[in-house]
Image (cartoon, rainbow, N blue to C red; front, side):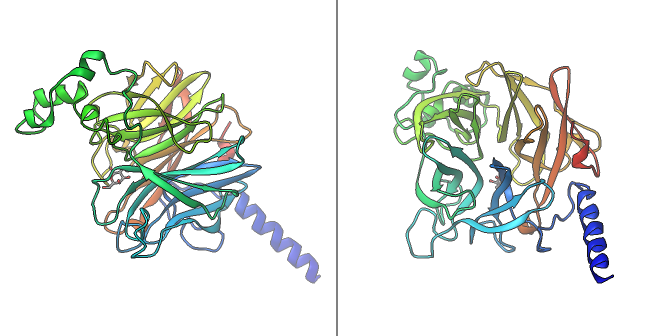
Amino acid sequence: MKLYTILFSLLVACRILASQPVVPGAVWNDTNGNPINAHGGGILFDQGTYYWYGEFKNDSTGRAMDGVSCYSSADLMNWKNEGLALSVMPQGSFSDIEQGCILERPKVIYNPETGKYVMWFHLELKDRGYAAARAGVAVSDTPAGPFRFLYSYRPCAGSWPENLSQPERESTTTESDFAEWWTPEWMQAVKNGLFVRRDLQGGQMARDMNLFVDTDGKAYHIYSSEENLTLHIAELTPDYLSHTGRYIRIFPGGHNEAPALFTKDGRYYMITSGCTGWDPNEARLLSAPALWGPWEQHPNPCRGEDAALTFHSQSTCVLPVAGKPDTFIYMGDRWNPRCLIDSRYIWLPIRFEKNLPVIDWTPEWYLSVLP
Ligand code: GAL
């Protein structure tokens, strides 16, 4: 009788878990009953398990006091806390990732050639606000870490973007030619490569970012550059640990942040946000026949209540569901700047209409609805 009761309870528990809906914007607890703390995150699927990496937020500051968290799941619904995948270094260590730095939007990819898990993130050095605009990299032999921090830098030092013309490369216009920012002349100069030229020797600014591994195994780093005004897509070396120096600018002056890239039927799609800090704005949708472009812009992919504010969220990544070809989930952050640890997650299924992704607002949905 006792055994029967236990089995019955287990069965009920399993049914409850299996039938749990995704409730965008609700508190999402891990398997220990604590809210998942993995913001600006990304997901790696590795040998049957999903790993969700994100910013481990503190309740009183947006700065990194702990590091990058990692959760694992077999079903995308129930997440086990794997602890910190990357820990910041102690105060006074003078490490680039010293406690109190800003460490945002971590993403992890696996390199089958080296057998290493490679993490890239946006790094701002301690006590320097958002001035450093660097990319940091860490590496691990196992998906949950611990990752070992390698270095941080501004990408593509000494290299011109492939799509910056010769006259733009040779232009002598500099920032000091403009008394103020945001004038039409200044914006034209930005489009013509003002900041690319300024940052050529030291490397290009790299803030909001993502990683993308193409079907041929080549990896790319996509980041908001040029004072957040222009996105760059830059190729990584075969070991994924640095940049080759090959890169393009997309939508110069377009003010795109929070890039989330995915591919379907040989076409590349990117969801981005505008630049309004922690406040939500209208998502943008870009697509291209190849990573190297040409990229074109489409209308806002969001539909339904508060679509003009991306349902009060900002993109962080688009997750291809394992084993379900052409099935994708939009993942965004609903930031709470007054208490960043309480920022919520907006996950919604993506459907396609006339070959373009569409994200419908759905207050609650079941993973089983995915095709
Ligand atoms: C957002 C960005 C976030 C964070 C925030 C800081 O625009 O997407 O990742 O950097 O600004 O204000």
